[in-house]
Image: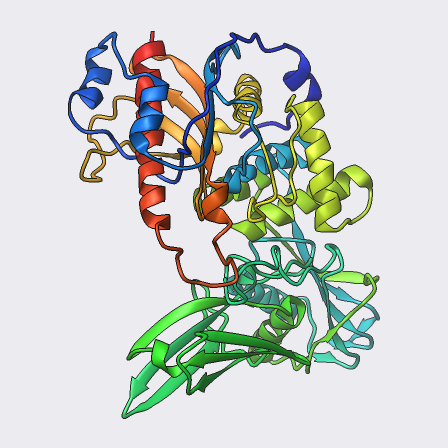
Length: 502
């Protein structure tokens, strides 16, 4: 179990810097780095003293745009190599690594989010003469299975009948309709934010065609259960495009889908824009199965006061962060960042204020130079970090014994995309990808035990300027650009293994 970051751990020792000339180059970096073919990969294992220069590798990648990279000794912070390392570039989901450190430092690794069922009046003979409030505490991991458990626990607590109203409250976090309004409306990775979240604020849409007609379901499925919901409804429209449309209709999310896009069967997750009512409807379904009729949920505008009949606690923050870094869940990052800022400022704040607070923390606690973060997930492409600052922050975190155990393995691959059986270099890192933006930051360990912290950021402003982010279609050239960026990532890592492995 990790321990909370301390300011002393970050600021107690200054990083040594080895000045290396920077050069302009093309963009490089991304999801999973690909292994380079032939003798270059083998040279890592045989400890060949030669390796292509970074300038040659960038030129070979044939990417338009900009790239910044830095690699440091993870134990001492000594800068080993860098190029355009002070250039601010979009970090994409690498931002989540900063958010993880922010959450650990502020909240501690054992922090747990709470979701409560609160009675606002007395209970006599199983009858609640008051309201019942499902009150969220910003838990990003609450799912349908947990709501079913809470309904069972409510029955065990002795409640049989509700005389007041059933209310839902998400005010622990200021409501935000979407993390980034420039994204496609139907993007499930861009949900609403609230103090009461369910299933990452996504609803499951499934369709099957039989006899020329479609059967449609909208449900809140998780591991054990898949209750149907009415808060989100779907209608098939006779059109070619767009594929989806959305309209808020009172207490409902109304969706339409183009018939021409469906095929015989399929499914996808859609975002929920009224998360409190969504969670309330699902909970009321499970309460009814326990013999407790709650009625239609109503959104409460004020924080509830009363007796907590049931309290659900999330897993410890360290476990939540490990899953967040593995699956890159945007909602988790935003909830953790918002909770940390609320703890620091003594009150809930909106996303932009929270991002500014984390930006200031990154400067003072991580020693980052000129960070600019607009959210905690990296979804907003206006965020900027430098490779030098990121690599330095990772070195500081390594000396504090944090983050590395939470990052996922990044496999090296051969020319055909197959994972190399005998990894010449072990890499754990956080990836980040937007259209024509690619980032990778983390740690690498060579066969002889040398540990390095690195960051690689790349972006093509000219190509990104042509992207209509509100459309769901992949822009022309984005896939090949990303593939070449991955090759370059791995090539840089391999170079560092050769040159600095000893």
